[in-house]
Amino acid sequence: MNQPNDPGKRGWPLWEVFVRARRGLSHQHVGSLHAPDAAMALRNARDVYTRRGEGVSIWVVPSAAIVANSPDEKDQFFDPAQDKVYRHPTFYDVPEGAKHL
Amino acid sequence: MNPLAAYSLALGDDALVLAQRLGEWAARAPQIEEDLALANIALDLLGQARTLLAYAGEIEQAGRDEDDLAYLRDDREFRNVQLAEIPNGDFAVTMARQLVFSAYQYELYTALLTSADETLAGLAGKAVKEVAYHRDHATQWVLRLGDGTDLSHERMQAGLDQVWPYTEELFDRDGIVSQLPGIAADPATLRPAWEQYVTAVLREAACDQPAPRWRSRGGRDGLHTEHLGHLLAEMQHLHRSHPGAIW
Image 1 (tube, rainbow over the protein chains, first blue to last red):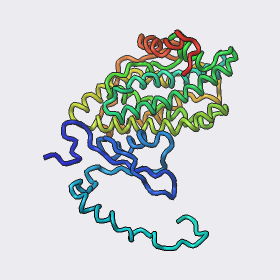
Image 2: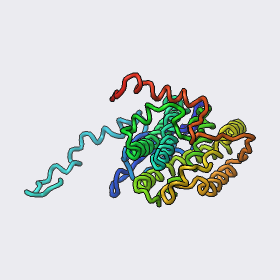
Image 3: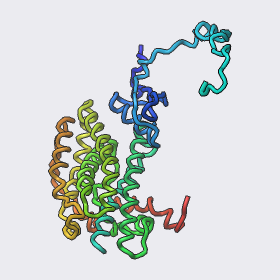
């Protein structure tokens, strides 16, 4: 059986790309691309995702290295959080003049 | 033509013609990622060409702007080296040409950083960073194809063999350069660093440096391969059919 990142006979493996827009911000996932290896993935990411000055730092990660939850587990993963309003800090009185809340 | 205008035009023609060639890869590269990489490189070169052609027109003082120079000259009036105009061939040929040309341009712009001409020095400051990336891009591919599978090695070597007859011309003595001391970069002085870089890449890529039995010459004097006319026909026909057309 093919590994998720196995290019097989059809082409290059898939990589996820994370770009940091400015110093002080965190890297954000911007998309994915194909590349034969890590060094080329980094260069392809530079060409595909930072050509309009979008970033100062790039991470590439093999897509196969990402562990994702299964869509089948959606209910048990996320539904229980839907009706727990008390988890939102909405029951506090916000003092007058407190900004950025 | 004024020597400085002629020099600027020659360097601009190298960039313009190669940009047009690389543009032919759009939608035809092995992967969409590579499509974008080659288009980016082509656009970097086009930007350099615009600056150089506009500057040539300005110094020439004959009322020709960058568009006139790009679109209204015939092949015999182009001053690019023949390396820039040869057909793309397969991906390995294009990468071989990119390695040779970007390694040359890297040394050229590095030398022009200290040019007494402010426009050329300013362009070099911006372009040397672009070209450093072009050189790295080509290097990565030559290494991977040269030291890859038997088939990729064979085709990379064939690409190098096809391109090598055009390398010597890059370093030919140029009458214009000797008229611009302190301003232009003498091609011969660029050779040692170019040779060192390219030789190291070929060694690491397990490829042989070709020893061609013939060499091109004359691009700087307007002598070109039959391929340039076809390239210009495609590049110029819109402007010639619809003078002054804009987007």
